[in-house]
Amino acid sequence: MLLKEYRICMPLTVDEYKIGQLYMISKHSHEQSDRGEGVEVVQNEPFEDPHHGNGQFTEKRVYLNSKLPSWARAVVPKIFYVTEKAWNYYPYTITEYTCSFLPKFSIHIETKYEDNKGSNDTIFDNEAKDLEREVCFIDIACDEIPERYYKESEDPKHFKSEKTGRGQLREGWRDSHQPIMCSYKLVTVKFEVWGLQTRVEQFVHKVVRDILLIGHRQAFAWVDEWYDMTMDEVREFERATQEATNKKIGIFPPAISISSIPLLPSSVRSAPSSAPSTPLSTDAPEFLSVPKDRPRKKSAPETLTLPDPEKKATLNLPGMHSSDKPCRPKSE
Image (tube, rainbow, N blue to C red):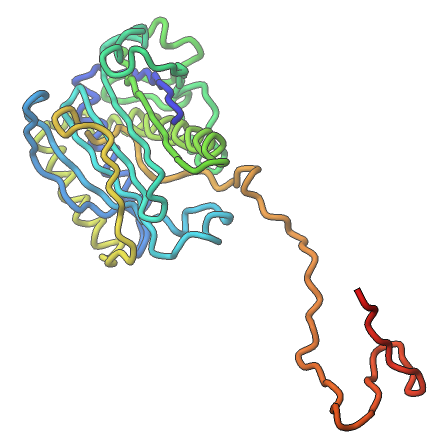
């Protein structure tokens, strides 16, 4: 198990971001979907928890095969999906990911939102006080993203909001910008396979970090699209977009049943993550790379003709002349 705490600051308030994350998730999922690929919404309905109160439960299936790196497509079935279950009790959410092909793999994300610049070092004391974890700050303006996902229109260094006047964030913006909020994410990655666990968990965290960075950049870059929406309006946008997305990808019955991996008691579970759930990396981890040139085994003869024991004919072998006497095996 590898545990990290990510802190992503945004030039928004917590109340504003509540609308923005729902809009961003829906729009991103629709953009990333195509027939047979993308995000299918299985369930999205109100949910009540005895501890956290009223919230929203969402279950999605993310069909990924063509988006997987080439090394993974070689071993993963064509009908393959990741299940996302989310409990949203904003400003506290929980998201769980399990894999239809790898039952020993899971990702668990707890998220809390506060109006500060990422300065709360005890925010997860109740959840992971005694657990060792690395704290990673993600800067939506200055951190590099994979080149193939870069869009100038979604670059906070260049984008300026017409409705809010915010934007064109420069280095050090988190120290002076108002308003400012922080998305705190406690991310646990598990891959319980001996010999591969550490490297796979590190690789997955790299992918998760890229996803969080790109998703939060989009949430801010699209602010003029969602800023004036009410919660009812963004829920209607979410519903209509989900319906269009399901039609876009088509409904394909899964060939592999998903393994449920309970991570927490139901009484303390809770939420849609604030980032898209589409894997981004296509580079194979070094330990999974396959040599391009493999020596091929020489094929054995398809048939072997043995001498007729009743006929004292010699057995012709490569390198023997017809006049040579057959060799007798040495006694052991």
